[in-house]
Amino acid sequence: MTETRDESRPVREEDAFDVAAVEAWLGRGPIADVRQFPGGASNLTYLLRMESGPELILRRPPVGTKARGAHDMGREYRIQAALEPVFPQVPTMVAYCTAADSPIGSELYVMERVDGLIPRRDFGVPVTPEQADTLCAKAVDALVALHAVDVTAVPDLAALGKGEGYVARQVGGWTRRFTDARTDDTGDWTDITTWLDEHQPRDAGQCLIHNDFRFDNMVLRRSGDGGFAVVALLDWELSTVGCPLMDLGGAMAYWVQDGDDELFQQFRRQPTTIPGMWSREQFVAAYCRRTGISLTEEQWRFYEVFGLFRLAVIAQQIWYRYATGQTTNEAYAVFGPAVGYLEQRCRQILTRS
Image (spheres, rainbow, N blue to C red):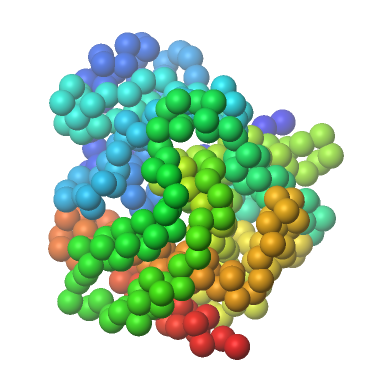
């Protein structure tokens, strides 16, 4: 039996679009119903229930001013379309439309919905400690498999790479994005960005990275052993060719574990505190064992801090849209305080002996 939790809700008024126009453009028959998914704070995601055929997912950028280089629907679509033949854990793409030709005035793409369970803050179904332990191992397997994809054999994936210097480009690029999204209440991160600039390592290789790897971007199904299998990875907006340890650091920025302070617990988006779930240290160690990468605690400090800094920039970009009135979504009101907390967390790691 496939467990699918229906988290869709009525479409928010400010996020509504012309359904009849999309139906005519898509050419797959009548759309019986449109719902919106509450998860995600960047691009907007909708469920299209068709009168016949599989359910579809529509992705589009948010309304209002966008961060430079963000919300590229065409890029996200092409990555998944190119990846599907060599990495089965991606949805099947259906159609893409440019902003110029769009029935709703913005870029969009449509893909088939993958049936299964997406773990959120709460898992959604009962999970034993043994199942949670095994799922963590399978998550490592999925990340290792993604990083092992031969991008040189897939032109559309190889084209994502810009050569050596990925770490340096990321430090510089995210620092600029943070500057562009500053608001009056933004703290002074100069010492943190300076430390990142002065301590950046060489790239630990080049591979396809997801850049938003976490449980609430996975679709799970029951496996034969009664546990769960990772059947799809979602939300490829930030995917590129780059350093695998930067991907790992980004993933661990979201990984709130049992024993973390109360404020960090409030920002938890995935069920990583239930009995049997691994700690960040266990996940990193397992990844290094699987890949043969040697990583000291001091070397890991850079990737840990950068992952949190990048998360803070993403939160600041969303907070900027809310603070400047580009969106009235009250769910975004927490992002300002989140940036302040992440600043403190970065400093705690930098001063950790």
